[in-house]
Image (cartoon, rainbow, N blue to C red):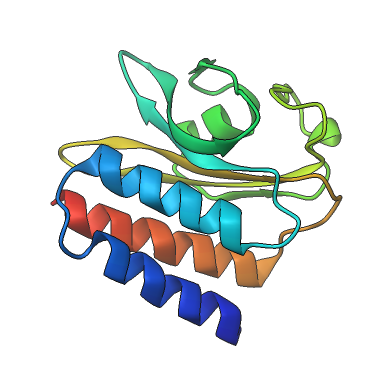
Length: 149
């Protein structure tokens, strides 16, 4: 993981270390990522509510409020419980275009005994996310989930 991501991960840990509320922590994480990552136009969370993903705290343009499980990048990541790194969202089968400016996306699913959902990060550039970003965002979600348990 590069130095910038390592520093951001330490900031995530510091931000959420003394707070137990999952919504407050999700809001701070979304804001930190949105404001400190280059070439990102959306960062936020969706939570599983009654078998669909419902919009949680985020930064960026208004977004889709509800996403069916198994649909789009977020629904697919959650249904498979596998991180999705998509270089071109328009080539992803069933992509849901919440923001027409988004070109690439990474979505990390999580599930704990108290809360489950996804962390979703979008970019207006093709192929913005790679292995470094996958590792970084999965580490962010791991820290978030530790505070949930």
